[in-house]
Length: 514
Picture 1: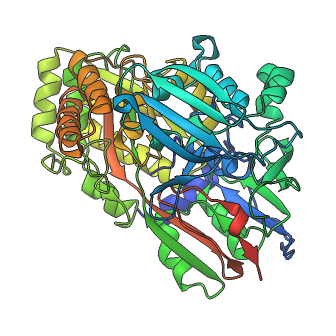
Picture 2: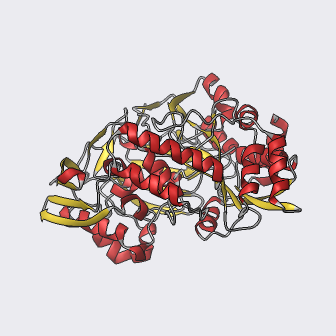
Picture 3: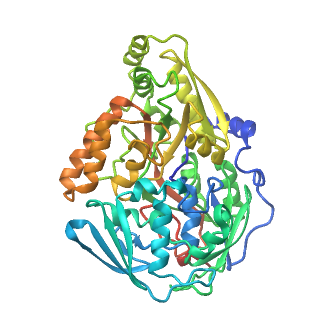
């Protein structure tokens, strides 16, 4: 989402938690319908939350991106192997030592409102993202752009302040999604409720907390979608999501609870597609809020958490214990950080050294997921052993995202879906005043290393810089990395043509139902 994203013992405890808190993000979907979806012209996708935003330039949640794949195209995309390939840009040239990118654009593309896609539209989108008044999370991703120049109707030039090696990778995601300038001007702040892109599906309607409907765009420039209508339903509760899949009301879900993977694999009517994920999950700490403004308390939290136990008890060892925000699947991962079990004695000592008494804080958990609730309970129990009391508060996902942006919290259980380039995974999170830096974290060395990693082209040099960053984040502990998720898409056997991309996003235009 972002991812932002998903979450975190025994079956009896799980069921009790679901019954006690089956609320939050699915007011209209807390139980399954008795009607089975049997249409081959309609694909029903179950999501793990209700997307907070349908404007890519305002979005900060991973679940948003699942819907974006149907409505929008990017300038460049990735293939199933993670290689960058053309999309709205047919080709590009990098000159002037990596500071100038010249894109040649498709000439046969229209937005879903009938207006033309061209170089002026590209410039409009970049200018909107770069405008500080827009407060776009994309600004920290493309802030190296100094100007965008229209060279001809279908050729646009992007000039950078300095070389920026992750640019193309970043443009495969929300920063590279093209919005209709006409629709943005017409709708203003309401654009998220009437999104218009160039993608294979056109937005039809949305009922928050219930469904989002899109229909095949007849004027789509690319290969025509096989399914005419897609309906997205949010099910924050993994049990409800799975029930709707097994009963036939849903064709495909973007994720399933780890405890259910073996069960789905054994179901003759279902199948599971697995892929290594590129994100991280853990706890955001507000470093300006007592007691978390005390680095020794943050370090104590970091050492008190037994990541291996969490991976085993909650996730049935389908996740990997984490020591930094850069996952094992990333070439920038630092394998020298190995503290995945708890060091209770060291954590207790740090609490004592902090000089604080009666240490306590509130941890906000996304409502509706038994995994998230279990994670909160296990963290609560682990921290109590070292003298830190944690109050758990269940919050609707979109509300929690907003509270994070406003820094209205002590701690939040939140993760990130990750990006193909490590810069896209961590830069906006840990650079001072970054678009996803809800922690309020600032370290001059980390800022320096993050920016250096953007300007060098050598993977070896970049790897060394990211190792330094990971080690400093371990010491400062503004974010407690707990696990690296793997991506599991569950679907009916009748779903054909699904392609699993490394970014874990569902691209629906190739899917059909038999």
